[in-house]
Image 1 (cartoon, rainbow, N blue to C red):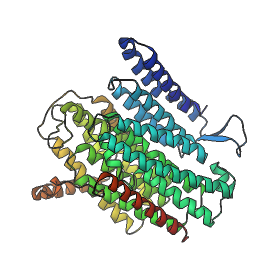
Image 2 (image 1 turned 45 degrees about the vertical axis):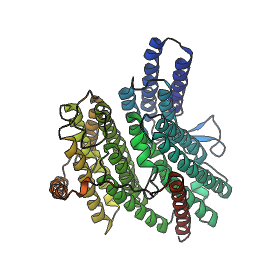
Image 3 (image 1 turned 120 degrees about the vertical axis):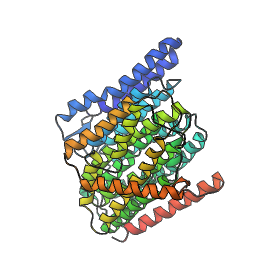
Image 4 (image 1 turned 60 degrees about the vertical axis):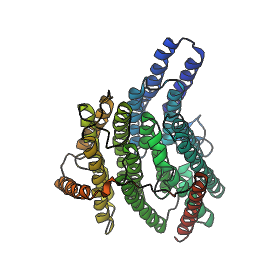
Length: 504
């Protein structure tokens, strides 16, 4: 039953392309294509609900043995990833019905949904890789199809680095297979022993997934791709697609020997990503680019949970990020589309009470203010930290509050007006609150005191004008040379990760 989760959007992606290609009547196409698209996005829900009754459940497709077959599962590790993905794909399908001029974007989003769900249910490294690539290719296409200036260049950079990471990951998978004789994660876990080859494979695999996720300092492709894609695509890229490599890291921690030295190194990378993303977001005036850098920072929180052993902290934080970041991109994107600008000084949610309410809810969820679901995930992550990790995470929370206050300060000002779509993002905002109350029905006064203090700091900094400056955390130069320098940085990072893993 579990593979049907993937089969449904895959089938409807094919049907959408078929209808869009074969039927000549524009009026009929305009009615059928969005209907097929929404149906394909929503129908995996009954499959998940039926499958959930037997959780945890493992299934070998085709009745093969575990050693020779493809295993899929629904368990405590992947359920919340799947749940978050289905919520966001459903929200985006409702938001974007009628948004695109042709059916190809709809079919690509359905294909992306199939790839994401396929990766999340996989218990086999090669099967996971295949579905991760399906999701990645769809992300390139959606970025390139955007009407935004510079979208194709952003898609090309995304393509170059993601494919490089893919080659590295499949090479690491091959090494693991040669040393263990298996691709199945459970069998790898039972047979993998520390060796020079396994150490090399672990370093390469983590480096590849960190690049695909857009973790600092391997984030160079992410801000342009996420900010220049269309509004529905931005919500999916930032909310869901970057969680596929995150889930891959969770699988690596489960199946392979990852030593304490590597865990410590990943913890350092996590904090670098948290603060690097905060710095990038603080010095942006482009609203979507601010949210893109915010994703770099938030991925650091998730990596921190994985590296310190707070697995469920990382899982709940991933679910929270899918909800609030998807909602933020839909809210800000709808304002930008209606008002014809992404400049925060010109954007305004005045006169759009639904969008204003959604953005305020989602803005409180982003830094993890209780009782929102992010606070629950952050509390679990904090439980795995000691000094100086705890004060650093509180400092990061203050930095996150600072850039989200900046965003709302500008959006609350006067600006252009236009028709916007508010209900979907408002529902996502309410979900972050309701799910947080369900998981941890308590208020932490320290969160609200920190928010008040950060607001005062923001007002003082605003008078200096420093927050009105812009910063691009990329290597400057001609495009080709810049890509070459970034590729060199990536391979130096890979070498460093392999050397660090060898120290265990």
